[in-house]
Length: 320
Image 1 (cartoon, rainbow, N blue to C red):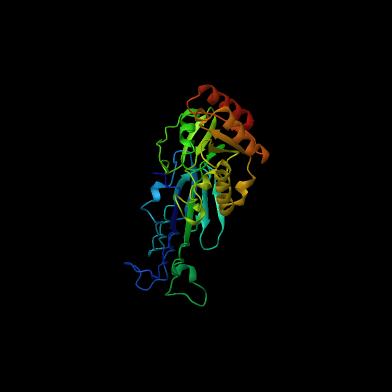
Image 2: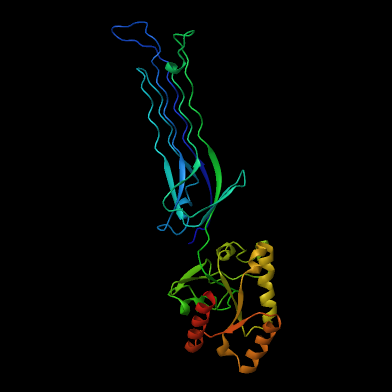
């Protein structure tokens, strides 16, 4: 199961408290202040990695907390600084601060990005000694570490997005265009999560089918549309045998408009699928519908190897 978005609370460590002690040993019964400073709390960082594909690690881990710095001690002993935490996420992970609304995208695989500062350790009473106060009996408490509520979202990094209504043949096409092995069956919503395959060096994503009202939560909703936000080209798969191909096309476009209008601006090609079930007259008729809409039209059949090879060649040329 693909876990592509998660809510996560991160809490940096608190600083350790400074010590308020006075020197006492076998030689001195009334010595001056000797309380050390507290250690700093641990920071929390995020780092992109190629070794993580989704966010399943956080499915049952809703809060990540760094350790606190240790308290200062007598004899001017400083408390130990806490270790920092680095959270590994897939490259391109989008992170939103749910309080401030600030957004980051994590691409750097070498330099961790600081998200939550650990609290600074409190000063011991040694730090407060002065000419007017030779024996301060107080120390400073450690500062609290930052806490943030974050929304983590991943988007598949694909150059081509296969979109369309359920049963438009997207999964079948992905299986013959690439090395992917999605589940395929003759009923709606066989694809319950995005699949990705490689056409040479070019990743292709198969996005689960949308239906009218998806933006309102019907069917599978629009939860997977984020995975085509970064694609270069959209192949809009239309089952040529359905009664109203134009309506099928407009259904998807309407849901795009509800989700993110930027999707409407992406280069889009109509891909008439299942042409083995249609005669030449029907193919020309449906092609003409989209040609009048000034949409470039391609066609293929899962069972026609020649049409698949032609489609592969065309897609690679389009990407170039």
